[in-house]
Image (cartoon, rainbow, N blue to C red; front, side, top):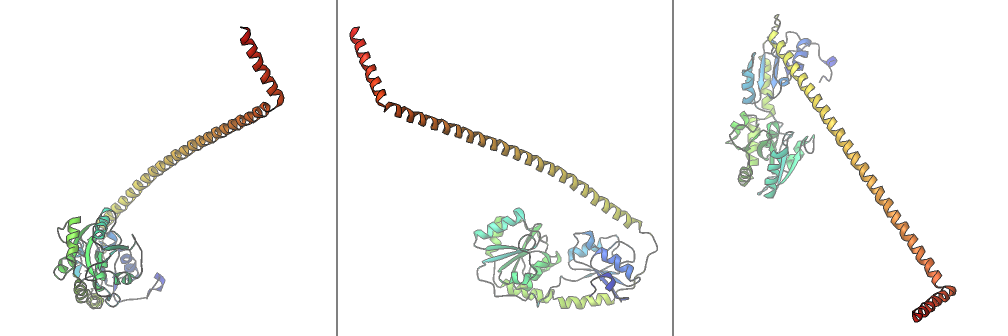
Length: 359
């Protein structure tokens, strides 16, 4: 295994790549050597064969969805249709499924927001615990362990195939659509769509999720395991792939300047730069709003602190006034207890009485 460009062998018989960058790098490293491009998805240009004449001799599509995209390209080499492979030894299944589902694992990197909440809340109300595994939940390098204790695996794409091999009931449901249970009857259509959740006209809803959960059957696990071994075994995939590699023709270098492809690449670069400019502007605007919010928060804190200090000052003034009043009361009490005060008070009362008689 070569972990760097310097560790590559001096020569090879055929090149197998699965991204555009490596297609160009290895074409330069091995001029004239046949190249086969394995295309697992049609989501990104990186995963599609470069549109240069003579560069790629054959393409491998892992679903009919991808095969259709490859056939629609301006330059479409031979398309070989294989299925998504899975290591059926590593993903070999756990215990038998429970008669009533208790635990569901949401395995993937896309399902989130209202779509995820809809499923989790609906199934939780029916007594099914839902756990999120993947970049949006608990990342793991050992998905087979996560799958082993699940009754249901909610997934798309390759994750669905791994769950099938693990002998779990598989529910195809994702951010972009949902097709429900994988069964021997639904498998052909779902596999052709790469288990992407867009093979049927089903519209996810709380009612549909409740109805689907009611049709859960523990025998789904055994049926899915059989489907994975029969249609997705990595060993058989490798055997078919060897045949593709062996039949790849030597690459014929084109001497023409690929103006159309260069134009497309410049366009993609410009679109990327525009998105970058837009994101930078949005980031600046958001930073401005954050700073303004921080200033308002700090102003509110300052006002609150000032009010608190005023309250504390007022409280201290009131306490001081109460202290002075109590001290005055004590002084008055001491004065009234003196004999001279009592004599003067008695004399005042006597003078008042005499004055009333003389009237």
